[in-house]
Image (cartoon, rainbow, N blue to C red; front, side, top):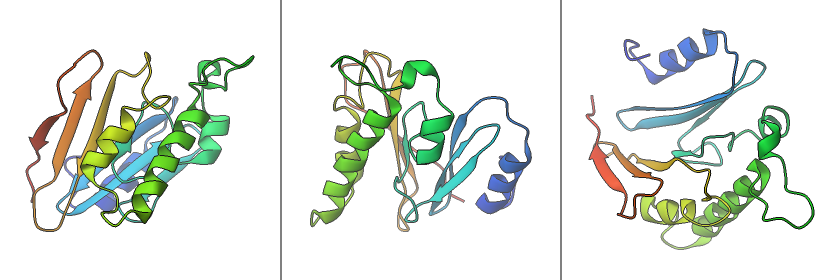
Amino acid sequence: VLAQSTIEQAVELIRSVPRTLPYAFHLVQGNQACCIECSPSCFTVSFVGTGPYIGVHANHCIVDEAMIRTEIGAHHLPALGGQNDKSSQARQASLCNALDAMRVDEDGVTAEKAKDALLQSPVDNETTMFWFVVESSVCQPPKLHLRFYNDDSEYHCYSLPSQ
């Protein structure tokens, strides 16, 4: 993937590789970024500005609603009997609602708001290993904001080299 000249070529390389399990990839090149969710039977690409998410990863499918219904393990299915619902569907709905609210706000979707939304229940729960947000703009190199479970500090920010 790293040897490809363009982000589009990297997407096509990932598309061509056989898969046995669902995976999520985030690719950034210059001011372009995309999220790829794929499984043995599905492949979804969401470029910045074209999909429901911009640089959000949650250890399970969050972009492709069909994959959420068909490609997840039983432990991600909705809770029964009034339990706290930590399913992929509940987590996606919560994050989508937060992002929709951000879009109508005059500041729009920002990295800070996205980081805060990831830390809200049910998106955040005891099964979450880490959170990250990729921030990409035309004027600055991309930034990776990363926070690990049980790390009470703020997100760690890393500037990514641009080409």
